[in-house]
Image 1 (tube, helix red, strand yellow):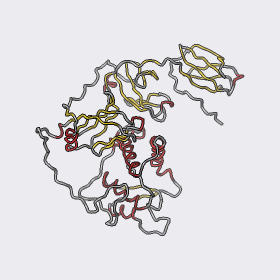
Image 2 (tube, rainbow, N blue to C red):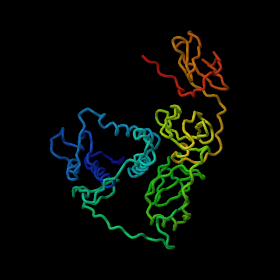
Image 3 (cartoon, one colour):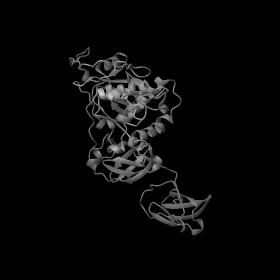
Image 4 (cartoon, rainbow, N blue to C red):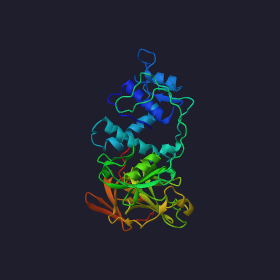
Length: 416
């Protein structure tokens, strides 16, 4: 995924963004666009626009959608919704186009490298994507296309592949691949931390927080008070690592990969609840509940029980369907810390009484009387009982006879 911020979406601005994406990610076989005037003159005077020319000169098949068919580019429309909800709705006004581009670049980097996607089997786009940079067919761009605005300048002539340079050793004779640097950084007010040109989107809620970064030629790890909050692929070169050491960073010995937790031991992983209220573990989907959609939770696997918490408070307990060996092989699995504390307040959910005077919660049917049909009641689950209240008055209290977890917390909309 690539995106660019422009003042006006003119044909030249769109082509500059396309040229930057082709230069960065390689030349694809096909491109699919809608019928905007920036992409085609199909419904204008005819002929070839600049976008078509770039596709033709680089051997790209330009495919167009049918008129009035926005679902053909549904993936792009869905990404626009994600961008609005997760970035633009929560971010304040941008200082400039450059500032907006920096924040967008950090969001795109996190979207490509760190965010699991349900459409990819909970893989990350970076795990599936392969660049198409072919030295025999260099990128060809029109000579009159010049970078302007927020986009960097691009080379108009075909680029030749540089000869591989000999490995450069540091002052003490250590190869760059062995460099491992630790240094502190403070999250700026924008929530977008930049280190030697590489950006890390951390969110405005972490502004002012002092982080510890551990970087090498392979990965960059960001820690807050010793707890890792993000680990991303590194784009830092050996020169960048030596520069960080010269600026006061501490060179640390490259530690061996931590051993997997042993069989039978409790383990913890961090997972994000998807839009359907599910968490994926070992190829299985666990229902957590739609109120937790989009939240990052700690999943603790202890024997036959799976605990979900926000780090300290227990939110849900579910049956664990994974064996000890499968739990130890989970991505980013670590030995579990102290068990989360159960919440002291009772769980409250809402239900709409049916026309026969019944409600259902966790697979258990409870009668509240036909006189309250279509009314919305509140159910408190605590101490092995269900207490039903309506308009502030307790109308029923029954013993809980089911062990199923509560998966629905809000009232369903009445169906026609």
